[in-house]
Length: 284
Ligand code: C2E
Ligand code: MG
Ligand code: MG
Ligand code: MG
Image 1 (tube, helix red, strand yellow):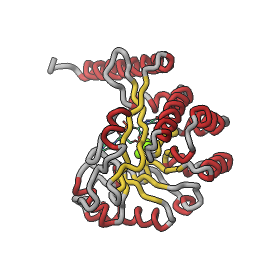
Image 2 (cartoon, rainbow, N blue to C red):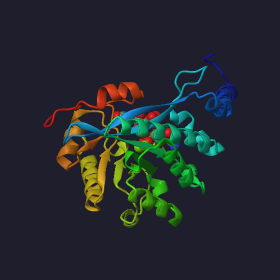
Image 3 (spheres, helix red, strand yellow):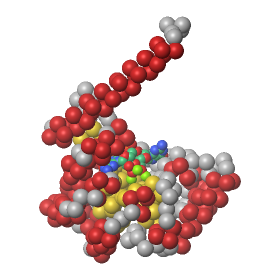
Image 4 (cartoon, rainbow, N blue to C red):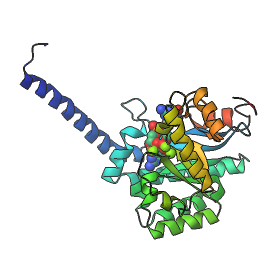
């Protein structure tokens, strides 16, 4: 009805919000049941080194095969699980699955780490590292097969206890990465003190680099800063060859994005990216 009164419109709007809230409540209720019913799965997306043309690591990304919905993406349930606390149970499942997979890859001689996303709420658990170590040893996952991705905002607030544990893991061979760099407000002098191997530049920072000189300048400065501190740069969200060309001139060699590969299931990942170079040595 095009001739709705202002009040009518407001009611329609409220209904939409209510539905969304109901939807959220439903998902929230289903999540713990879904964990028990083993409804979650991991997809993997390669990080490619253009110097070798090969995938060097796979980021594990969680999905939910909800019985009554299409595959649910993490944006629809990870933030919610962080709020409710269910992220701890979900994170445990992811941790176990990643360690099991990493152990298997290691036994098969697949020379690629698996990167695992760790949320703020998980890292805040006093026994987080104990549970991680337990999952690693339980499955026989070598530390060098694992990389922890910690978001920029969280990395800046890490307690000494957490920093100490991360240092210990790195000493044992694991990798630590800062995720979504460029989306928060980093204390840049703090960055150099963090026990970190690599920094993943968020896709918002590279979206316009092929069309905007300012975007190029900012990106180039950020890359220079990270490399100057002795850390590796990984660029996320590469959607075009033009972006990759600009980034190679800036000095980046590690890329992740739809232009190279979309996240996919383990079997498909191994068939496509485990053995064969993805791009030829001097392409691009
Ligand atoms: P993230 O860690 O920054 O992961 C990268 C996200 O960007 C993934 O979305 C990936 O599919 C997407 N992506 C990759 N290449 C491109 C591209 O070229 N263009 C665009 N537009 N997107 C690209 P996804 O899988 O939906 O995950 C979203 C976020 O959910 C992740 O962001 C991460 O913060 C969180 N997440 C995913 N899996 C887990 C998990 O197991 N545990 C936790 N705590 N968080 C997770
Ligand atoms: Mg990530
Ligand atoms: Mg990211
Ligand atoms: Mg993220």
